[in-house]
Length: 222
Ligand code: DX5
Ligand code: ZN
Image 1 (cartoon, rainbow, N blue to C red):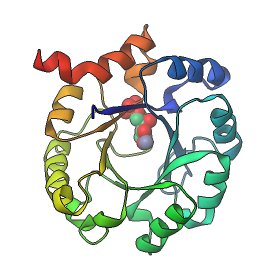
Image 2 (cartoon, helix red, strand yellow; image 1 turned 90 degrees about the vertical axis):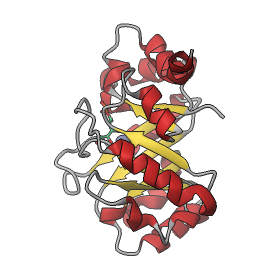
Image 3 (cartoon, rainbow, N blue to C red; image 1 turned 60 degrees about the vertical axis):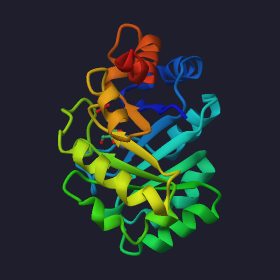
Image 4 (cartoon, protein in one colour; image 1 turned 90 degrees about the horizontal axis):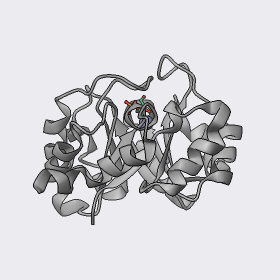
């Protein structure tokens, strides 16, 4: 299976969200990445349920919801009801991660766990078999358009190894600073979902920016 592309609407034009979602619908993107920030877990506030609900109404692709919020258990059902297909919580924000994952799955969503750049992959050892996705943060979460952190390559390899026997179908998602200069290398290292905000939405040709990320691996091999 080729890797998946999830454009992040954090970098969309919120006054033209329907237009930007229609671009994603038309593109080779696989998911729509939806960043929720609470001003507590991260030093920024993005948007809430009405926007997720509206995005879901206009998207033909599954919503990949990334919760950068403290104590996400409070809102899991509300995000499911707003249209989330995948719900990813931060390991640093969950006291009872196993229970949180179970709740997400009981709601019928895919369950993801995100790791901040400083959190070691080994912290996933006792949960890896129970989750659908790991989001490796390749920037410190909170803002779009930041510089990619190089140590991510090492973490992808460690995660691939950790998942090899216990969860070979795991989605290994990379979030932050992904663009055409690192996409192929990330896929080579073992990533199979690339999130991209700034590199897609700041492009003069957003459809070809998505296509470039989707086919980066092939172009790299050719
Ligand atoms: C960062 C968010 C990312 C962000 C990625 O806190 O979790 O999903 O939208 O944006 P870029 O691709 O611009 O780094
Ligand atoms: Zn994100």
